[in-house]
Length: 171
Image (cartoon, rainbow, N blue to C red; front, side, top):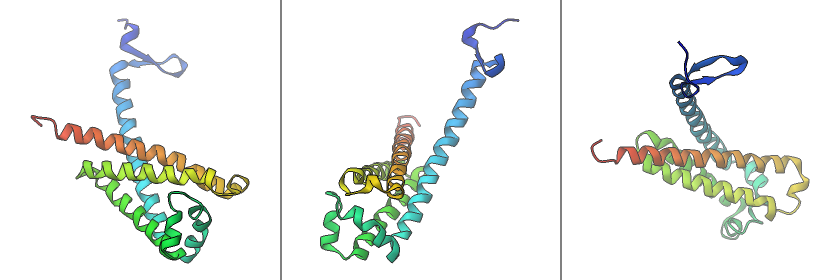
């Protein structure tokens, strides 16, 4: 029995599997990828948020934060540690909002939007912090936020899809 091209997917070495089976596998891989991205993002935000309450982290982020048009005001209003604590509270709050996805997808959408905004702000340090492009460790620290931004956007989209399904009539 021969299958048409639309009914099979060709893998490496010419191996063919039914198209429906390939789609089911793709959906499963997609779910795993989204879960890893969301929970990895939550873990990173929890860890970084807690680090903000240490003097070493407060001192380390000050050069980037104080030159930011978005965060510089914190250093006028609070001490170095106070500004870092404020940022830490925001990171911890975002982590909790993202973690609420299963029970409160709309809440997780808020967390995803806030996380996306936060990562856009930290990426802006690449152009607002003097000398950051010449410091490989600072540059690497900031560039990782590009991937975290992608995870935050993916988490937002996933929560929007779940919220839309749960608020559909008849469900």
